[in-house]
Length: 593
Image (cartoon, rainbow, N blue to C red; front, side, top):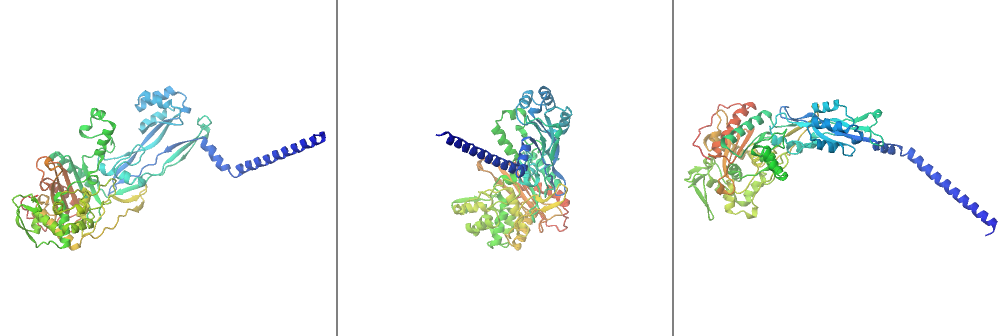
């Protein structure tokens, strides 16, 4: 190539490279300008996040208050102790102090202090006095943050209803988990600035985003009623050496539950310690983690809603209500009980093997006569009987505001023959929960409207300002008011003149029904004794159900469960302002079941 042309080529090449560099510079300036003007806040925040260390601040959990405002679940100020590895200047002193003050093994503390991480939690739920003492050492890299721990002022009171929280302050069982979103609040945080090595900049200080406390939950449970029914349940459990005792007290008209106990209860402030024979240190150490967890689950279990049982003769209330409503039986009907009834190829006996002889329907209920109820069930027939089970709400859950409600265990309709219908009519061969029985009886004697059993009444701010009243579905009219009034009348006579006479309380009109059922297999001879009662009989304002599981010695519901409800009512009826009535219906007859 001639020299002149080569010169021109190099000159063009230089110009192209220069222009490319100018263009690249313009693009870079434009991009830099865009980032500085349009994205400055974004990258500023990113840079700040890179040098910020965040420590959470737990929100104070909302309190649980009883019907009268008594605090059943509150908060206790505690501390969380943490270390920031990059800020620790004297690790041996830190290890020594934390070991001694927190009572932890040195190996455990050393492992956490020497671990290279942004922050390592040493221990949470530390008593405030201990936290303040550790703070007074002014150890570099040791953080003492105030925190909250759930505290239950009455220990084991209503433990299986209230439930408890875990170390993260979230509900685990009971109302604590059911209303977790109401109670939990919004977590806050502490922000500190650090240099590139992760060391806090003392001149930068720290900023706080304050937590927002959770709302308070007011419930229908009454401390005084709950305390009394727990005492009664413990008394009869010890007296009869029973496995457990359950008592429910509720308002038949609106479904509010005033008290619910399943003894033995457990300590809400120490919920991971087993009760009874499993509580010894040696016994707990022998258990595998899985075995211990299973025992804890059983200890926390709320038998009133989580477990089902054969109701026995208390279910005759349902059969009688269905028979009266359908018109297949009336108070004027008369029967004859020879002590048994033949159904297909089965001879089904009455509890009184000699028979009750001639009796009216009212007397049959008073006598708790199986053959008469078999006859009522057969008159209804399978289709109509199941129609009433559905209508009464027995084939679905009650909707109580507690987790883990069990459903009714019932025969499939297509599998029910005459024998199955006969046994169902007096409360055998199927299972329901205690809360289902209580809610259904409430609905049959309150004028006939289905109720939703519940504890939650209202939500209030931490300052006590009402935020909302909790609402529950309006129940269906499941029987007529006339049938409901007839059931009130019949069940009052059961207590005044029949098998429930040990629940009779002078000056009060009490209605109720006894039951003695046998668990499977029948050959084990393990019994469940129960009684459901309400008062006043003609306008029920309170209903009580007592269930005694596996009592020793005498096991008849009319003998051991009815007196429990009598003692409970003798205390809570005056407390609830239910006055005595001078009209006396009692003409107590012989003891029956």
